[in-house]
Picture 1 (cartoon, helix red, strand yellow):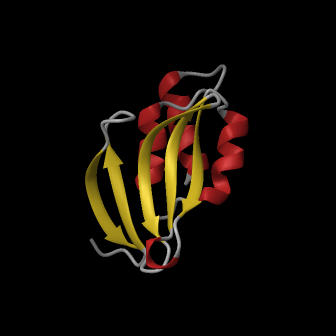
Picture 2: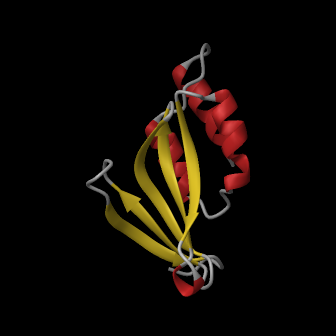
Picture 3: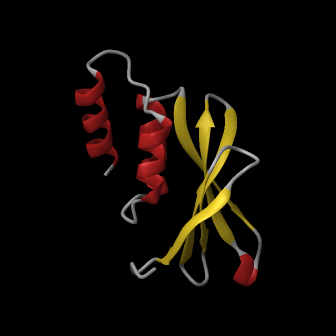
Length: 110
């Protein structure tokens, strides 16, 4: 998934230094096949714009958050996955003004 997005952006934007666009990273985070396992690779090919993840909470409220990252600065929340239930929430908007854009489950239902 990550490789496909990078190739699409490269062909659309020409060749040269790779910086993944915010839109590309948002589309990646919204894809149910996306994985935080790809974040180190994304950070290597696009250090200026990449993704970060963080796990917080305990029990039923334990959740993994995905955020945009610009260099070392955390940006907007993109995704929240409740680890116990598998519910995934997708967010839209800039940092501090995020709003729920959709929700689903790990098995694909919305």
